[in-house]
Length: 92
Image (tube, rainbow, N blue to C red; front, side, top):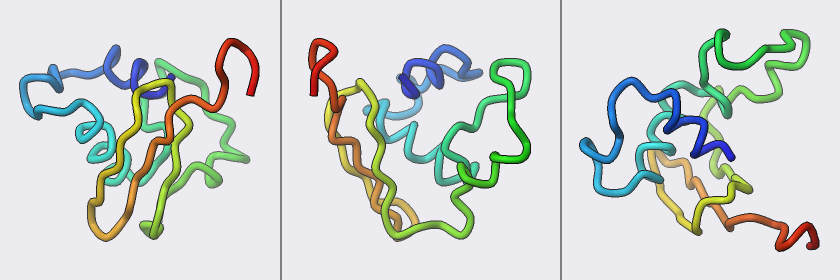
């Protein structure tokens, strides 16, 4: 639940800055160039594998499998898409 964790640890309330919370998520991911841009205090990092979550250089498309509703945003020529959760009641 990436969107939930991002909202929980957000310094500023994203609802006040943008109308759509998914736009705030996409802006954060592309700006930070990382798929999980939370500080070390909130999640441990396995440094040997951290490069796999890097978004540098910015890719053409990023597909998230988050529990949040479906969305698609384009930022800096990067299409960020969330098809919603892949599971439904612990089944695919």
